[in-house]
Length: 435
Image (cartoon, rainbow, N blue to C red; front, side, top):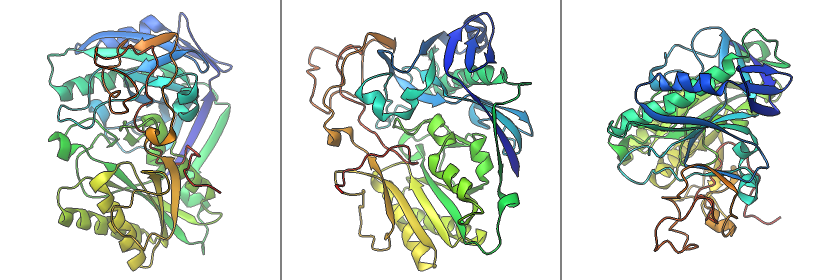
């Protein structure tokens, strides 16, 4: 597979009479984009607002952040398989991206009704919370959208996320026919060097199936699927084209973070220099029994071994009992002679979330904290403007920092930070270790 990625850097976003890109400025036909969104009869209300880095703006509730990308040559569509989009193979040809832009999906629709996985993320465009979150540095185009509340929850999720993809598609499409200021070619075969050791990326992703009791629950998907299933082998070019997309629980687990996976891109750029990057093995977390967990871990390692991997890098995006699949993966790699580097966040100050002894994990890389409570941030200061819901209805009571006896607090006021700052892919530099 050979993929050319054309980058159009955006330093400013404005509303105007047409949607176009010129010299770093993205102009958006606000009315035209909203007409396209409202073509879906499931959408009840929709509006577009802009949020720029440095502004005193808070966005709540944030379900996802999407980087506008469009295929201009090759098969398929960027972010394939999601919301009824074709699942045609992607990863070849040419794709354009608007760098520095995020389409923020703002809606009160939760991912499912079973509890636990509720949307708790808000974004600030300035201040201490913004300093910690990569997507707060983007020029954010916020789609505030609500579907028909009488629809089943899966249909509401589909309508809301599809609306955000419509906006993303419309913005990225304005780069068709333009010459990108920057091009990068991703071609594993052309850069493969004989004699270098083979390295694979094992990417464990949460499945909400067990908690939600639904095969269609919104979460980080692979070609649109979030259910529990056997390992997938992906070419990294497929990831660059959005074969994995969707959000899960954290400011560092949006579609933007996934498609810009810092670890995977670093593996690609070292390919043919320090090692040969062989591919991405994607597996699902939160199986119901230990037998299933062990089986999936064994099959995941087998897939990497069949690729010829002498080493793997392992990431995961969850916590709790899902660690058992990951632990068995590390253990199985070592037993089969495959060196394993385990990238993980820190559950509490001083260490990773090791829920069982794992002596085989002799190469652990920290990606910082999970819990913002461990960072002693206190209350995040108030802001002048809110995009979205003016009331912070969930995700404020566990810290004990606010008196909510009179009801949910105003979103513009001082708030505890979102509970999780879980970095899976190497965007943050936070650690509890002292050097």
